[in-house]
Image 1: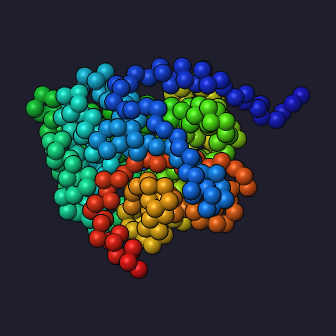
Image 2: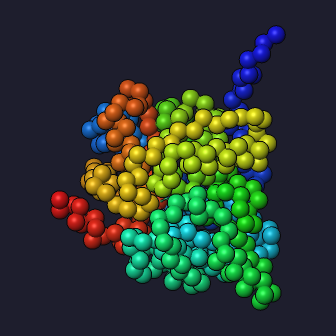
Image 3: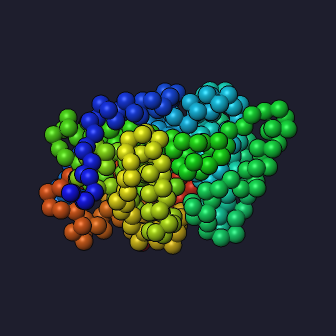
Amino acid sequence: MNTAAPVQAEMSKETLRDLVNKFPRCGIAHLPTPLEKMANLSQRLGVKLFIKRDDQTGLAFGGNKARKLDFIIADVLAKKCDSIITWAGVQSNWCRQTAAAAGRVGVKPILILYQRPNLPAECDGNLFINHLFDAEMKIVEVEKDRNFMELAEVSDDVEEAAENERRKGNNPYLAPIGGSLTEGSMTAPLGAVSYVGAFLEIFDQCRQQKIKPDYVVLATGSASTQAGLQAGAELLSPNTEIVGISVSGDRSSVSKSVEIIAEQTFAALAAADNRKPDVVVFDEYNGEGYGILNDATVRALRLVARAEGILLDPVYTGKAMAGLLDLIDKGYFEKGSNVVFLHSGGTPALFPYREQIIDYLKK
Ligand SMILES: *Cc1c(COP(=O)(O)O)cnc(C)c1O
């Protein structure tokens, strides 16, 4: 008798697409986003580099949260909620895009924004844009640099905002930070499901361009982007390695979150039993912590801007690119392999960091 674990067959992309399409969406994202070759950088670095332009998802300067909100806003409407309460840092891309999406469907955005010490606090970048969307905002100072996982749960401030709404006879939707963990009103891992959809796009586009995606490299914060890509890759293209560069937590806590969300995603898609995702996370490119700039990040921003004319952001994609460059340097990627970098957006945060960035550029 063969006692080895059964090898699970790859799923067809049609089957996987049908499973993803069972979840309603509201159509706020511009999809598919382009997959472009980074020809100049590839030549310079000796690895075939591609960039998946999820900074071009179209909603209020774009970014990965538009994909997630495509599903989450559909859930808000299905649950007949009239406001959406969410929380994150003051310069959160998630909050900016949530406020934009909420207004589109006539739902009131309420944001609980955590102000961390040592991070830009002025009314600029995402925080400024939230005003244009008429988001109700409460800024809460936090003492230390709390990472995503520590902020994952519904806090007292969020509960209080929800109670306020309920007292007025309203029906608030509590959306978890980053649209990631199944917390608050979100009972299915909708953020990750949207990134299974993104993996399907990458898979299709690679086929059209006659390449195999050997690696997908991305910035990881609240973990559902990586979890969705991971689930998609395991089901459709097990030889594709998903490489997360943490911008906040340490390797073990981030990997754990990716694993939990990926498992929830398999279950939500009814796609597989007992799959244990094989998660890769690097935490050595996080520097001094979430949102804290460093030299390697600015060098990565500058390199991609000058070689490809593409703007990365200082909090997520700049750090992930710094990680990618270092991993290329160390020979992590097999020779001749194709590496897809996910541009997950975040560019409005360039502005509150402008003086710091200029200082680094002068060094
Ligand atoms: C939120 C965000 C990420 C991280 O996505 P998670 O799903 O939270 O891990 C990466 N890049 C940008 C620009 C983001 O705003």
